[in-house]
Length: 112
Length: 110
Image (cartoon, rainbow over all chains, first blue to last red; front, side):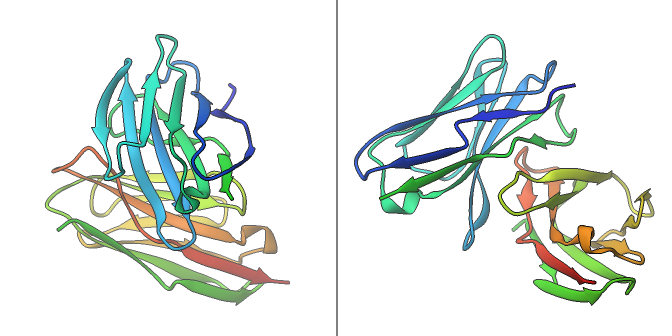
């Protein structure tokens, strides 16, 4: 069974630009969550989608947004990039509520 | 306030030297506790789920246990390939969102 796939693996952007990251969950998983990971802050929850609806949202500014498609694939978008947005962005899928999250290997975003 | 604390922050062991990692939590009610392993540059890899006090799970050299206030990840006779950051996450009754610990960085020297 294929795992969670995230693309691209690496991105370098300039301040003020916007970026879109993509995530394909494990087949059959309808929940997709996004996390930001930095050395200082650890894993920070961004949002969670289930059946194309945002079900939960973390404490991030509105520049961070996401969506989920009917095939459960998900994208997240960050607009007006700031230097502090440099991080590893992780996507995770799960089969149902309270079942384990399965993570992709992330997209490493560097903002210069 | 729901909180998860992992200790120690870092642990260096010789190959074969057994030890334990701690994850203590303060939540109103526990729906589940999860252990993950993360290698540099990769996403966390799921290890165990524990749902109730007294529960234990084992996988190779790892054994996870759970009490009402904490969980331990015991590592027996570790090998260099067990070197990684181990993360603990708690799913509280009060919130769908997982509460994550900061992790323990484990280094096993040959």
